[in-house]
Every structure is written in structure tokens, then in C-alpha cells.
Figure 1 (spheres, rainbow, N blue to C red):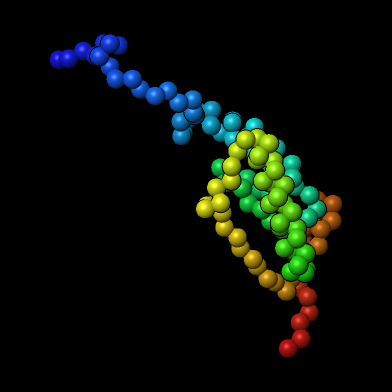
Figure 2 (cartoon, rainbow, N blue to C red):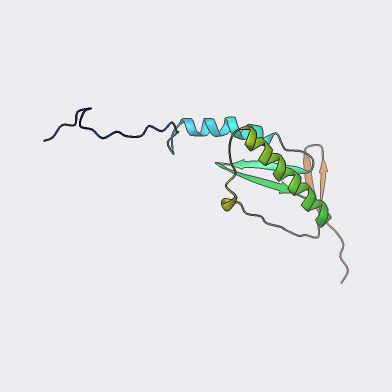
Length: 119
């Protein structure tokens, strides 16, 4: 049996990180993500799922959708820069849905109604 003493042991790097699955990791996530979730407004909605974020925008005009989404992404980027964090662009995805339904928002309520369509 060989015993390693400090003189014989190779130097090991010391990293100050939180291991995956650590009980501290969710708390750190909450501290950081709360700043990002403050971006929620009438135009955009951010929702956190575990360690992911979903950005939802809904409008009737494509150009307005593009403008609102780009403004929200810029705000997310600026907030992450303030927190000294980076967005992993390679893991980002965008989805666009088109519907004949109209989204109506009233104080705390969201409802969908179908527009009459002619063929």
C-alpha cells in the first residue's frame, strides 16, 4: 500500500464552482434568474423551467412580433451582461406559431377566441 503525502501528491487545480446536483445550485439559479424574469411586460412573457427560460411573445402583426422579440432578447442580453453571465446561443431555439385565434388579455385573464374565416 502506498500513502500519498502532500510532498508526493501532484498539485490539483482548485475551482470555485457549484457541482451539478448541488443543493446550492437551485438557490443560485433563483438569485440570478429573478433579475431576468423582471423583464416580463405586456409585450413579452418569460417563464423559467428548471434551468431553462422560455420567452413568449404574441401579436397580430409579424413585424411587431419581430420588434418585440428582438427588444426582449436585447434586454435579456443586457441583464445577463450585468450579472456577468453569457447566453449559450448554440442551445437557443426559436419557434413561431400562427393561428386564427385571437388572444385577449384582461387583468389576470387570458382567453383565446377564434376569428371567423372565409374560404
